[in-house]
Image 1 (cartoon, rainbow, N blue to C red):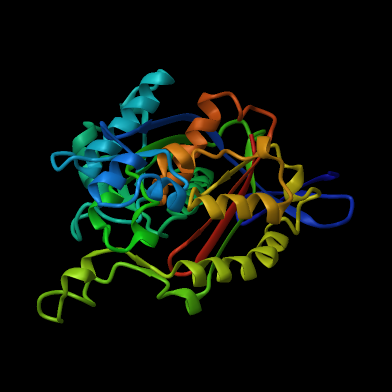
Image 2 (cartoon, rainbow, N blue to C red):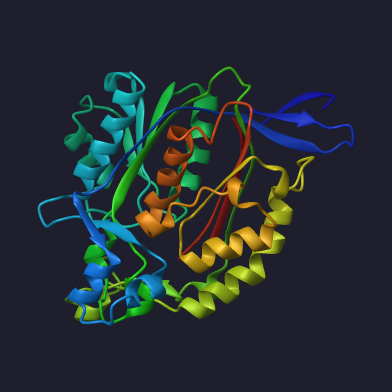
Length: 348
């Protein structure tokens, strides 16, 4: 690196080759998570669904996952995750300047889930709060927005919280789409820091040819009692094989674009935090990117696919277990309904 430029408020490093790479100061100062009390073994689901013993584990790749009971709300889980982050890192909640809720499924259609989290967590009244929804890659999208907002100086400390109760939207007759999910929440608190830790690459792509491959039709203006509504419209549906095929086709070019301005490749990062989409998806990320097992944060077998909470929960595990440390390079990567792909490279 030979020097730095500033473009649109973003620091960009100039390499000897003449290319410029993003350097958006971003420091992760705290992480937290929350899981519902009900731990559901795959063997439990075998019995509940009348399936042959061992079927769910073989089909899903899960040992267990956590499900919320009827008394637990998303905002409560989100508040628990935020409190965990604050408590573990000795952060006073009143020091948070902005709350971003980055969940794929809202607690209700209106008002925002962010407002429910503010109420449940006891954050100070009047705190700015809003939702960002990019389905399963909502956290990566929100993290980039937080980095950009910190750069303006309008905020000093931002909390991003993702909470999902996927279990309430599953069709248990559809084994392909119902057996892989778990509930939970995660929180990440960020600051601009001193500039040494930074987001050095970010990319979000939406490919609408895959828009109908993963969906819940109800909950908006498309399907409601006046427009026509079936019970099945409230449940998640997924066409697994076409999703996997489309992801496989698009991922190589996406990664090439994401790393285009960096002087290293995906194989050179220290830690990879992928969306914990499925057992097959985790294997695919490893083989397609040529990664070693120790590079990947894989919590899928004990958490399942937690939708938007998946990536920040895995990120939390990376920090709490010491696998993510200052000075390392980290890749966040995931696919989502829409069909979207998002990735971010962090230098911690």
